Length: 375
Image (tube, rainbow, N blue to C red; front, side):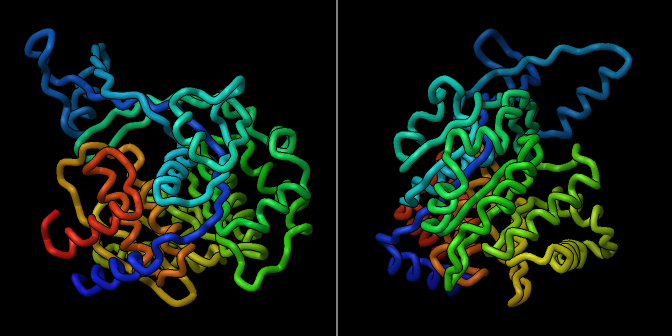
């Protein structure tokens, strides 16, 4: 592993000053990061419920009765898969255009720093709102999303421009990311609009740009909706190298919809789910990021790397989006899949320890410390 980290660090050193152009969308959330009180000692001091299991047990005790939960806000930050992904890519120095729900009548203040760094911003709606309950072993996201219904193909064209302008923008980009299919109700309509109206106007390029998709926990969507979305993503392969990013829970949900029969052996289950689901997608790459590792499948095979696991993270909300930023940057820079995965876990590893996305120099330094065993 140390040799791989050294090779990645040297590759990144050689790529300083890179120039990449990306378009990202389509959601937008205001996130309130919250701790849930376990025991209050006095008006100023309390202990928090440490794990989701602790929270579940407390809720279970209230069944048939009632209970009071005290939430203590820690901070308010920009949220949504698209904005967090974009914020991380902007920290890396990507030239980025954002299209999504950042405010109907002006940019909401939480997105202002991101918008100021972006090359262009097209806001289609007010943002959603998320109460993110943070625990040491994960998070519970309580979202309000009705404002995102204004994000549709009509508003996309009204705010960004006609199909020819959209095609001109895509023709110049290295990656087009369309995030949070689950919560953006008319995302599929936008994909259809792009396929039908914009694809015929796109240039044929020697190396196709990347298209990155993040479903964002599709459990509440029907199996038929999910299968339709998978077919739509497959259509992007004609003009892009399509990449679908999933966490472990999402992987098993998609595998189930495809009818993938999973191994009962825990050591084989994850790899088999990734490989068999990839075969059914018909796209360039499937990438999956469990908590302690990451893996992907491409036409060149299956790749798996361990991550720099952090037992006591400062912040977990956004860790997956930061992984995606590192992985997408790695692919866009032409890194091999294993190196791109390592850049992904390094980006998220830095983020959960520091509660912010790394710069390019930050992640190189982080990889160096990981290489030395001094994280």
